[in-house]
Length: 319
Image (cartoon, rainbow, N blue to C red; front, top):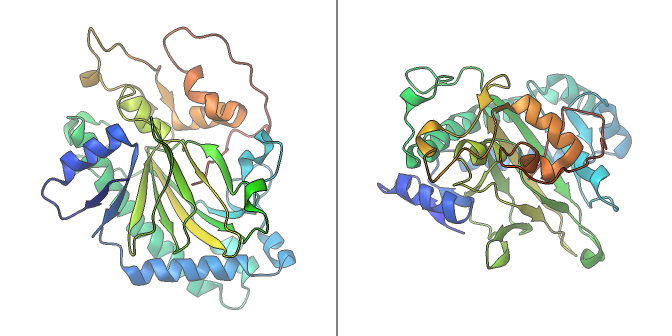
């Protein structure tokens, strides 16, 4: 997987090549302090080390995204994944107060600072990705003249993959794409994230100190008219070590319609997808999971019958 230095004068071209050939890359010198990444991992470790009865106090309700629980896509598979997760959408205060009644404030401050820094990085990455496609800030009507997106959507997901006595018989995270525009993943020093590279197969993403993994999501795949693939990825488990990761999902406002960009459509490149909002796409993905992109293709394809496994249009994928 390409490793791109944010300070490299050719970063835009390198990111464009990585997006087209891999759908993912790692970035270094990204401006997120290592100390903040360490603190975020500590909060994640503290959370998942709590007694189960304490964690269940912050369980997500059936109609909500935020909170503790198993991965929502579990229902699409015959066996439960060897992992647990905690999703933060908006302020973590209410849930963290349930987890740490006495000292929830320090954990809230860490996650809020993490999300603030990640949003800034995600904006920079988004404009580099769009720039590599020839799309400028003036072309995006849901951004202000300075490139700021005031109502951008985001969520954070803390994941824990406990040590597994028989890793060959368990899945940490099943194969999936992310529904977001892009996802930024911080993984601790235990490998486990794998991406599917065309004609190569599954590639394990190495752990680079201070490095962050960037995945292309379904929304950028749609906007790029299929030029940039939303990368299939999964997580495998370790026999002797627990693995932690934190994923930050970033996308446009949920009411904005995303469709192939006009500059990328031409006589030999017809539009592949119909316009769709992130909210609508999440609803389709909640019912059809990895078949969602096929269902919004403009080109005629055989009908796909989906099962409403969750009856929940607020499904979220994790990395």
